[in-house]
Image (cartoon, protein in one colour):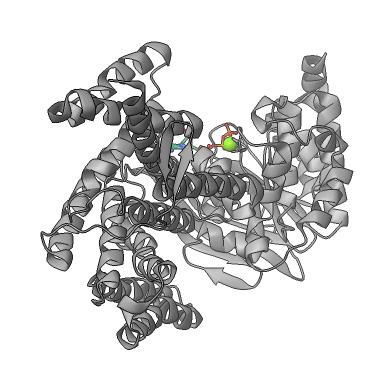
Length: 345
Length: 255
Ligand SMILES: Nc1ncnc2c1ncn2[C@@H]1O[C@H](COP(=O)(O)OP(=O)(O)OP(=O)(O)O)[C@@H](O)[C@H]1O
Ligand SMILES: [Mg+2]
C-alpha cells in the first residue's frame, strides 16, 4: 500500500467515522435518558436515505403513510389519557400534532412535483416525514413500559427494529438506492483529492455535534435531558416528566439518524435493511465510550471508520468481522479499568 | 386530643391517605391540613412514615385517599402536575443533579415555570442567592462536590426556584451543625413571611415545634396527636418521647 492509497482510505474512514460518531452520540443520549438501547437507530438512517430517494424519483414516499398511521395511534392513546385525566382542553393540540400535521404533509406532497424540487427541499421533505416518527415511536412503544428493566427495553428494541425492517421492505422494495451528491466539487489538498460530499459529511457532523453541545450546555431543555439522565427522581420533582424527556430524546435521535441517512446515501447504496449494520458500527463506538461518554464515543467512531476502511483494503471479505471483533478487546479493557456498575433501579 | 387545624383557607388538605409497600401498610388513613401562610410540622420516630407521606402527597408513590391542593382535589396526584400547580418537595435524599453546576441545578428548579411561559428565573435566582449567599460563591461548582450543608441549601434553593405555594421539606436539618440548623430554621420563618406555606418533617422536634404554627405526631403510620405547636411542645407525652427531659438530654448530647 502506498501513501496515496492510505490517504484515500483515511478519507473514506473519516467520512464514515463522522456518520458513526453521530449515531454513537444518539445511542449514548437515548440510553442515558431513557435506558433504551436503541437498535432501531439504524432504521432511521435507512428510512431517511430511502425516503429521500423516493422523493428524488418523484414518488410519494410510503413512509408518509406510516407517519399517518403512527399519528392515529398516538392521537388515540394521548386522547384517551387526556380524557381520563379530565383535561379535554388538550385534545385540540393532540389532534393538531398527530393528525392534522401528517394529513397536511400528505396533501402538500401530493400537490408538489417532488422530483423537480431542489435537493435541499427534498432533504427537508425527508426530514419532515421521518423525524416525527421518533417521538411517536417513543410514545407507542417505550412510554408504556418506561419503568421496565433494561433487558425488557432491549428486547422491545429488537422487536421494533425487526418491525421497521419489515415495513422498510414493504415501503421501499428490495432494491437499493443512491441519492445524488450534495456537491460535485473536488478539492486538491496536497497529494489528495477530497470530494465535495466528504466535506459535506464531515462539516455537517461537526456542525451537528457543536449544535448538540450548545443545546445540552446552554438551553434549559437540554439541561433537563441531562438532569433526567443523572437523576430521574430529581428531574421529576422539577416537573420534568420522563415522557417529555423520552419524546425529546427520540426526536433528537430520529433527527440524527435521518440526517445521517441523507448524508451517507450519496456515498453508499442503501437498501431497506442497510441501517442495521450502519447503526451497529455506531453502537460499537458507543460501547467504546461505555454508553456514557460522548467524546470517547465520537473518537471511537472515527476509529471504527478508519478500521473499516483499511480492513476493506487488506481483507475485504472480513471487514465487518474485524470491526465487530474490536468490541472484544474494548470490553475486556473496560471491565479491567472500570468498576462494574450495578444497574440502577 | 380531638383538635383540628382551624384555618380560614387550606392550601393542602389530605384526607385518609393510605400507602402500601407491597402488603405492608406504611401509612394508614392519615389526614392533615396546611393553612395558607402556615408552617405545619410532622414529627415522629424513625420509620413512622413521614417520608412516605410526603412522597405520596407529591405523587411519587401510589396512594389511596384524597389530596386536596389549592382548592382542587386530586384522586391520584401526579408529580409533574403537582409541580405545575405550585407544590414542591425537598426530598430526604435531596436528589440533586450531582454532575451539574450549582447554577444549572437552580435553573432546572424553574423548569416547569419556564415551560409554562414564565421566564423570570433570572430574578428568582437572585432572590435565592440573596437568601443563600454561599450558593452564589459556589455557583460554578458541581453539586456533587458540595458539603452536606451546602447541598441542603441547594436543595431548598432549587425548590424555591419554582416559586411554590406549598413547600414540603423532609428533614432540612439532617446532618447539619447546630449553627447551620439555626440558619435553616431562620430561613424557614423568612419564607413564611414571604407567603410560602410550609409542611415541615423533622427529627429535630424542638426546633420544629418552635417555628411551626401547628403540629402532627406520626407514629407507626398513623397520626397519634395533633395540635397547635406551642401546645404540643408543652404536652408531657411529647416532651417525654421527642423533646427529652426539659431538653436536658438533648443539651447533653449537644455537649
Ligand atoms: N420502598 C420501600 N419498600 C418497602 N418498605 C419501605 C419502603 N420505603 C419505606 N419503607 C418502610 O416504610 C416505613 C416508613 O418509612 P419512612 O421512610 O416513611 O419513615 P420516616 O418516618 O420518614 O423515617 P425517618 O425519620 O427515619 O426518615 C419504614 O418501616 C420503612 O422501612
Ligand atoms: Mg424520612
